[in-house]
Length: 188
Ligand SMILES: [Zn+2]
Image (cartoon, rainbow, N blue to C red; front, top):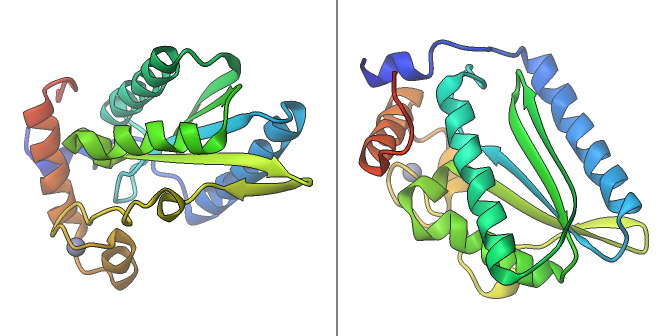
């Protein structure tokens, strides 16, 4: 099966659903954080271009990301106080609360994002609550550069994204290459 078909079949949410899920996610993240004070919240989703946001391949990618986050938590000896995995039409989302410092957790998640090509397909955000406000830990606070573009390797992926430098096809092609070389996702 060629690349183009990988991400053309599956659940295609409407723009409205995507926006609603983004809003719900932010609300949910705040709720979890308020229920688990003085802890750190991690949220993981997949970075998949195009209209299809959920299918068996996206699910497998998300499961690998979840496993890597869990491994990092176990490896560091942190305790999980809450976790939830949601399979939404807008894409799988995983939330986990750990009883340690936000910067320590961010350091671990940056390692997941940066140390393998597959890591580029995860978006892992780290939050904490300060005086009732949600704060997201930034890569720059820990001395890391912005994430590089998946297609051209340019220093700031958001630039390419905002300017729509690359076609969805180009991005699918790169993702297919990553998945084939990684070998953990069954591409059928
Ligand atoms: Zn680029």
